[in-house]
Length: 126
Image (cartoon, rainbow, N blue to C red; front, side, top):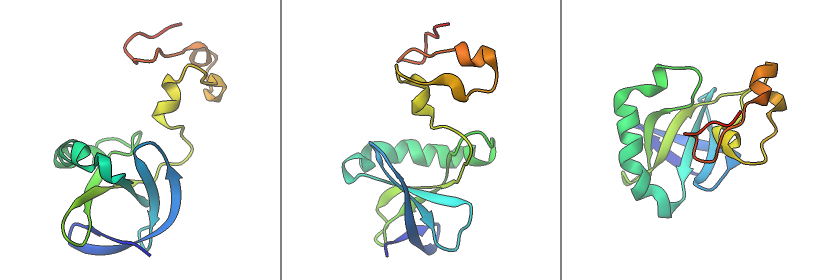
């Protein structure tokens, strides 16, 4: 079982929750309601500054709608590997909103069901 460092705590990674283009998301042993995203090694240097800035700003405690990074996660040598985040259930991943083949039937409002988003998220189409 892999172990990661969150703050000063050595934490065991539990089961794999999800996997995508940037890395993998795991549950954390002994930390109910929290998960860790571990970036693919090729992306870690590119993501580190952004993640550290989000943690510094405290974005994780400012909203319940987005699973922002709560803490930086490192390996046992102190190298950045990802971040800890709150587990969010009952929601769809944001990337699903900007795929061209998105099924919007999961929205509860008929108005929202008609809404679609362009690939660049800046030019909504109705």
